[in-house]
Amino acid sequence: MELLWYIPNQVTPGHRSDTTVEGHNSLDRLTALARLTEDHGWGGALIGTGWKRPDTFTVSTALAARTTTFNPLIAIRPGYWTPAHFASSAATLDQLSGGRVKINIVSGPDHQPQYGDDEGDQANRYARTREFMRLVRRYWTEDDVTFEGEHYRAEAATLEHKPVAREGRPHPQLYFGGASEAAQRTAAAEADVQLFWGEPLDGVAARIEHLEKLSVELERDLPPLQYGLRITTLVRDTTEEAWADAEAKVAAMAEGQHEWAADPGRRVAVGQQRLLDLAEEGDVLDDCLYTAPGRVGGGGAGTTWLVGSPDDVAKALLRYADLGITHFVLSDTPYEREIVRIGDSLLPLLRSA
Image 1: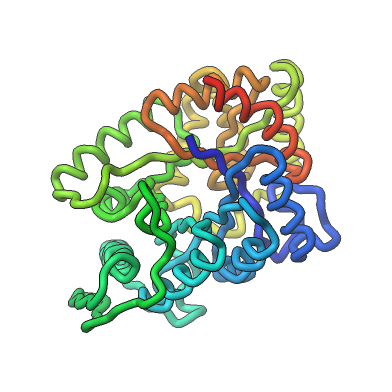
Image 2 (image 1 turned 120 degrees about the vertical axis):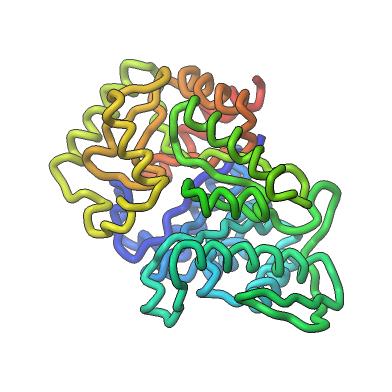
C-alpha cells in the first residue's frame, strides 16, 4: 500500500481553506510540508500542475534536493512538454534523487492556447497522450528508439541517462486520471496507475471492472494496471467531532466563493460531473463518504470527503483496498496540522491491517 499526501502549489493562498498566508508557496514552507510527510509516515506527496500555477517540475526538483525519502508525484501535461524533453528531465531528477520520482500525467483542458498548444478535440488530446506515454517509456528503457506516430516521432534515439531501475520499478511510475471513455482507454493501454476521485465503492468497482476489460480488448502489453484513490480525509479523534467539524466547514464554504465557480471547465469534465451528481443520491454514501462539499465548492479531490474517527476512515479506505486500490493520495487542511494528525492517527491503522 502506497500512502501519499498532497502539497498545494498555488499562487494564491487559501487553497481549500488552508490557513497559511504569509510565504504560503515559498520554498521554506513547501520544504517544511515535504519534511513533515517524511516525519509522519507518508511516502511522499502529489504536487499539482496547471498553466496558472508555479512550474510543478521546478518545485518538485527543489523539494527533492531538500529531502531524503520524500517521493514527489509530479503532475505534468503533454503539450506543455515534448516527450524527449520530459523523458530527459525526469530521468535526470530520478538519478539525482536516487530513484524517488513519480509522474502524474494530466490530459484535461488547461488554457492550452495561452502557451501555444493546439490540442484539438478530446479524441486527439488523448491519442496524443497515449503516444506521449509510450514514447517516454521507451526513452527510459530502450536504446536506438525509432517511433512514428500521428503526434510524435523519433529516429534512432538513445537517452544515455536512464532513470533509476530496480526490481519492480523499471522506471518512474506513470499515474493517470480521467473518467471519460477516451481517458479510460488511454489508462488501460499506457498507464501504470489509474487514479480515481472519491466515488462510492460500487462506482469504483465498476470502473475497475471496465478498465480490466479494456486492458484485454486493447491487448495491453505492460504489467497489469494498478489503481489509486485521490480523496480528502477529514479525521478527528471521535466520529461525532469529525462530523461536527465537517458540517461546520461545509457551512463556511457555502458562505464563501465556490472554488470551482471561476473555472466552469471543471464542471463539464466527466470525472468532476460524476462527483457532483453524487450529491443527488444523499449527503452521506457508503458509511462515511460526504457528498455535501460538492454542492458548495471544493472541486476535484475536494468534492467528496471521507469523514470520521481514525477507525472510521481506515475501515472506509480498507474497503477500497479490498476492491484493488493500492495507491492512496490523501489530504485535508490546514496542511501542516493534518499531515501530522492523519499521518500519526490513520496511517498506522492502514499499515497494520
